[in-house]
Length: 305
Image 1 (cartoon, one colour):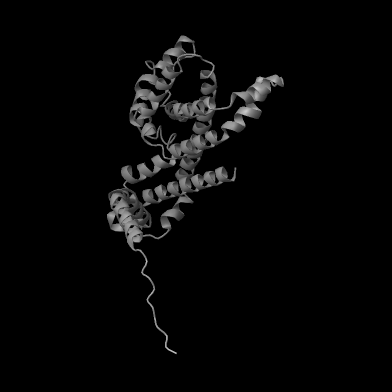
Image 2 (cartoon, rainbow, N blue to C red):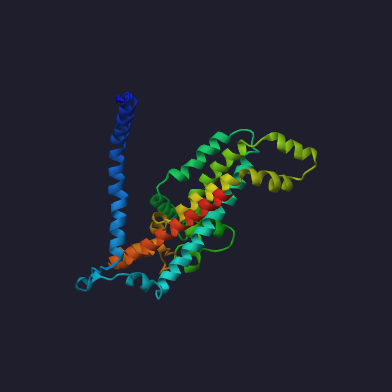
């Protein structure tokens, strides 16, 4: 019995070819951005990690060479590293907490103002758009300068005397925390204000009918509803605080001594002032690892919520 083989009908290759052309066109559009991202982020990070495994001391170049994990082991016995790490924790936690509390308080206050909210929002944007270097110089020369600064004028008028806000080791850290909080609290304020403006009013009307007090409405209604916004503000402001550099460098340079030398500044000073490139690269890698770990943990907590 003869069997005849019949060829299967060919599929329409038109849609497949069109989809491939669209993919190639999309890749062609993304290629410049991907190449730029590779050149500006990936390659420098790989080079930084490679340098962290070497001893590169421009003051003693004859001792340079592969060091393995020696730079990281050295941190365990480096009191300056632990001091800068502790200052980073204090600086980050205090600035983020102040920004959330002050930003939320201002947003709740502005919501009670019937007119002029647009002007207040525009005014709140101004500190954010300023370059951190400009902010640091502004506070150093006009706000916290001894005898002639705005803060000293207020303290002397109140009979509290004059203080060297950026030159006193005990006041310098408080001063840079105030600088960072002043610049970035408007961000938290704008996010909180936008979130509070979208909350349903019928829930509050029901709470008033149930004779709920203002603090009860805030704790049991407002806070749970704006929790996603608070978490997002905490995540974004934490990443900014961990990478803070320009404003502190312009205001104090990490001084006096090492009173405001957070880990980012310690890595900079080690690399470019002490010319110990290898150890400075390892400090930067540790800071990057801490930042990635904290961001991963916060996003995991946010998703679990």
